Length: 393
Ligand code: ZN
Ligand code: ZN
Image (cartoon, rainbow, N blue to C red; front, side, top):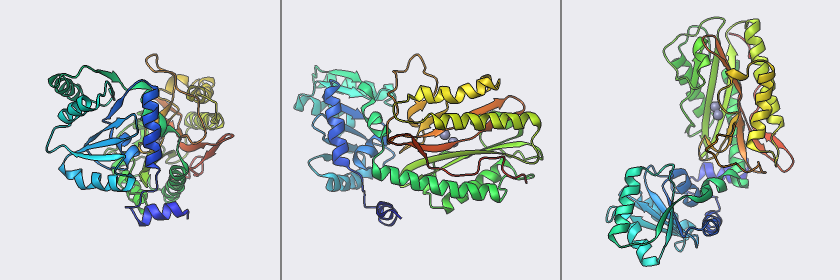
């Protein structure tokens, strides 16, 4: 096994990531984008920059690549440990038990002459933004609060470094191992409830070494399979029906995600045709993944196959999403929305899912999902699970 993976697994306190480089690149990008500081409210961004794993807290990143970690008493010791490891000149723990984050931020902006503060407006609540505005007004600050320019941290997180790729490859291999067992052992079988199947899947995901599920496992049977994100229920699986199984795990902090659709018996000709169209769409999507291709191009490649099969209307979601510290992160491989800025082309190191589906309301839904890494010349699939109709049980 890769030495880094051993270090992560056996010594959870050892953090192999290049936090200094991440902080300095993010600080430089901030200055280029015309901001003096960025208030980080999105916890995965805070973790990416500092290694701090917390359920609450924020950070102020300054243009010189320093990060002030604003944490409540629960995370003071952890923040201090991060400063010790990353470098006390780069990471500064600030206890928000003594002073509120917004008051501290205001006094810092005033004392350091910080004029333009970017906010992560997609995650910062309106309430928190108003507290910050009030605190800044109270110290007579004359700067400007601006929308986070160019999603600096999310943009940096798109391209994984060698350590992150090693973790994602290992995660892909382990999730595939779990999936092969789930299919071979007939975990989804007639008479079991969706909830029982989901519990079995979750246990198997943990058994292959994941710290937790990456999201709530989806088990959607019969007509419920036509709901792309159905929650498992106490519905019992019946002979002849289709079941969508979508599950993922977190390995070393990084998320992998996989879907297979099984049929409990012989599929009807219509469902068989639907399955093969999705399978071909997924192959077309995977084949389109290479540096220089845009996320929208990949979506189009998969979507066109379903449209040609007359199933375009049944494919309502995007073809895939980025994987990393979050199970859904940039890039978004989907039809562009008018409100979205154009996404940059794929580049080596991006990791994403390819998961087209076809959902015929009241009948059956099919989805097939695998994970791929964009490489220098094309792509590498990091999940490996048989793709034909899994054996019926
Ligand atoms: Zn999934
Ligand atoms: Zn997914």
